[in-house]
Image 1 (cartoon, rainbow, N blue to C red):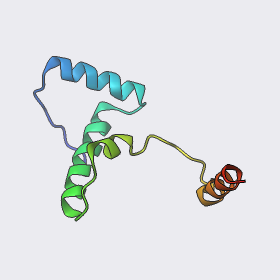
Image 2: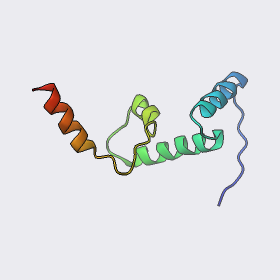
Image 3: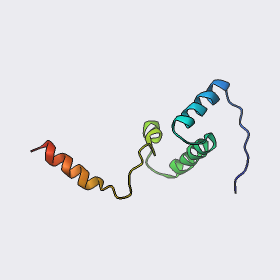
Image 4: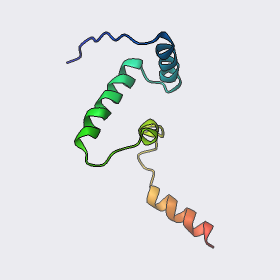
Length: 81
């Protein structure tokens, strides 16, 4: 169930967040929801994820058929030939 939430933030923060969301093709609501969920999940984990890693999470969309092990193996083969 979705519920409406009102937040008070600095206008400059809102403008930058909207621009970031637009550039990443995500709604501001979804972006905030994802961030809050990551806080809840990370508090349950023993390992801590750095803010840099969090910001990069979900940036790359790969084909479901992409085989990263094979791709990396080919890369290493070419590199050390």
